[in-house]
Length: 152
Image: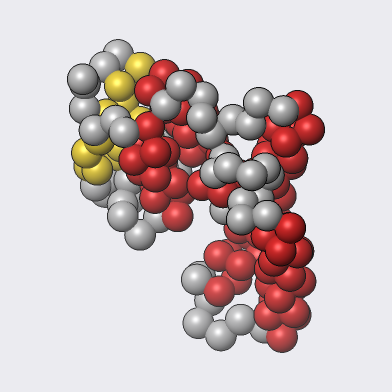
């Protein structure tokens, strides 16, 4: 089996997500660090983000695309709920995670030395919503691990 290459750095939440997808799909992968926002990075990703996946002649950007690709090619689609409502919930949770939770929790708490009271309040609210979802099930979108869990 081909070893996948994931360009990024280990501390990146989205790089970790891509790596977790490889682990779940039981596909070998190697993390290759990137010189962040340097020409070599922009040569692989025009917006200077990570991760970047290389699988032979396939290069993919953006963690959701990477997770979906790895899951369907190597993991037999196990991270995509079969039930339409559960699949829609997974997409909904991924979207909320990318658009709201990441921005509030990671953006405010990781990038700032002292988050504001407003940021702390917003993060508590975001995490309360996640806790409510997890109170109903061990996973975010269905009764099994899904893309929603890896992305969050």
